[in-house]
Image 1 (cartoon, rainbow, N blue to C red):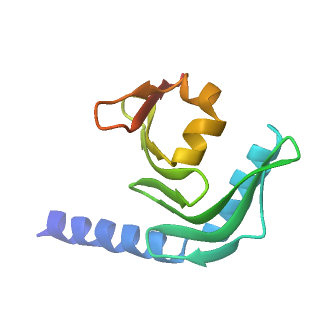
Image 2 (cartoon, rainbow, N blue to C red):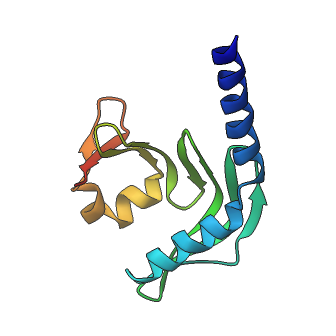
Length: 137
């Protein structure tokens, strides 16, 4: 019975923590880290959600050059989903257990033509999508 109460308390604690966690402060911390690499996200609309947050109508700048308009980006415990009419759609999964970041990217035709050098670093799949995996630590 005592173990059941402990498990119930842990579930309640996790639920409460996720609900009231200051997601906007976490986003500002990520923005600050990206700025070290001259990557800036601006003019975004921030929407807090239960397990993460969402950015809408953001502009991505790298080294002061506007790279793309991001229509929608959802960041949650389950990964990152980015959709943009200019660059395409990307699904990102961060796996802490095996210390890897996996990106599946479906670029637009415009992106394929104009940014072919970037695509050379990604592995092309049979369905036309691109795959990238990065191991850290």
